Image (cartoon, rainbow, N blue to C red):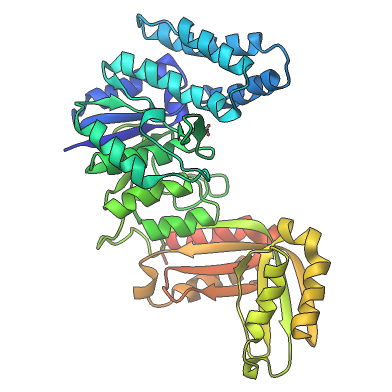
Length: 439
Ligand code: ASP
């Protein structure tokens, strides 16, 4: 049995955190492949090493003196090395980094050094081999991740290794230069490594005990989710719940490897299992609630709309022409409403409206801003009577006016539109009815 373990920045922010991570890895010998992030924040006022690197490189790029900021970064690593009593010096590595900064080799190279150096420390601390991600994770000419080449090379390398540390977040371009994934991308590296070594599980260690039913900034002490499917997670992440990088699920999902979100600061907690499918019932009818503020509802009315072939397509073309993506589109007989992101729409509002006039010549249009969308997600909803009824009676009791309802045909989610100002109260009311009172 092989497990891949990825540790986030807060799990590796200091020597104390490294020691916790060491204990976790040593307590289970199947934890053979380790993917570290760069050191994160030690407290709320601290700065992540990745951000320090971006700032430091910006100075280098502008031809300014970057020696002091680079020393501060080195200090962060030295305090980890000293705190762990390691016989390791990063002196030479920092000379090379400084030289490369002077030569302006690129911002991705700069950012990647956070995980690269943490990987060297981690390998030294554990006595594991260090496998530079630049040698095994590849991007293609147009900058997309090259899954095929990566899998071929990485699987072969890991096959010959007892254990290894592969730094997260970066790989290399066809010309050998360094390229990073988007922020939070070490999650993706972990997933790629798990697929390549055919791991039985991908453990993603962070600073929370898994996914929560609702956002803890809105609901006090929300319950953790024990098991969630990839599809449910995708719905919730899309609506703002942040647990994993969005792209991290794809490699393992295809390979049928579950992800286990765990808490470095509470290693006994089972965390959340993210699986392809499960017959396990969720603890509650709903699996989770998430949402986002800041949408505009564009209502379009036209008599006999339902009998005009191609009306919807033409109406949507007005948005497409102006590069606006569409979020939801509930419709009636002679009316349709299109929900779009307010920030994206505001600057192009009049262009979209004139395209609409030209393409479908509506009888009446109306724009309503400051709407929040809430997704109530759960695989258990389709087999339960009255789920929607409970949601709407909870909202009615909380005096919240529902502006839109959209239930996907998969019955995996119900999307509800409310005014921005009712957003938090609506989430609390839905959480209360399903989780607290369990009516
Ligand atoms: N260190 C990178 C970041 O801060 C990548 C990661 O942590 O996953 O985004």
